[in-house]
Structures are given as structure tokens and as C-alpha cells.
Image (cartoon, rainbow, N blue to C red; front, side):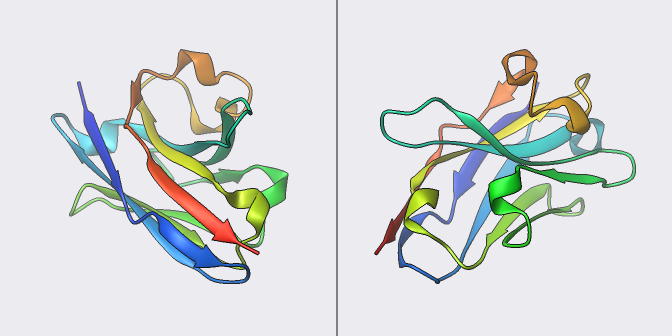
Length: 127
């Protein structure tokens, strides 16, 4: 099993930046595909980004491509989501996720199969 704890959320103005962190503990970090989802008020949870465990391939939803970057620090068991050029539509609770079996390339369409989730961190982008 793996435990996930997010941090780094907060209030930022339109056009600003934030970096979210996800600390993973409890199991072999490198065994997991990792990623981020978000849920805005009144909306369903949606895929944001993921990174594969073997080669570090990255995947993004179209609305964040070119603005967000996912990365991992295997030595520290951390996953990051660097968010630049933030917009009010990015306001949401951001959740870190991990799964050993579901490849990161499939996270956009099969999120219900992901095994582990953090409790989330709130990002608010003011206009």
C-alpha cells in the first residue's frame, strides 16, 4: 500500500504559479504510476496529469498542456505538479493518485481503477 499527502495549495491571482507536492510513503515508490486529478465545485473529478513509473512518460489533459508540468523525485518519494499561467478555471481541489497496474497513459479514461488517493489540497485562482 501507499499513503499520499498533498501540499502546496493556496490562493493565487490569475497568471500566477503554484507548485503542488505529493509525499508518498508506505511502499516502493518507483513501483507506482503517479498523477494528479482535480475537482472543481459542482463538477466531477477530472484527470490533470500523470507520469509513468518506468520511463517517466508524461500525459496531460488538453486544458493544462503547456502550463502544467508533472515530475517526480524518486530519492525523496515526491511527485510535483508545477502550475503556471493559472486561470480561474483551474480552481479546484487537487488530488494526488497512485496505481501499480494501470499505466499512466490510461488514467484519463479509467480513473475509477486507480487504487490510491490523497485527501487533496485546495487551489483557488482569483480573477
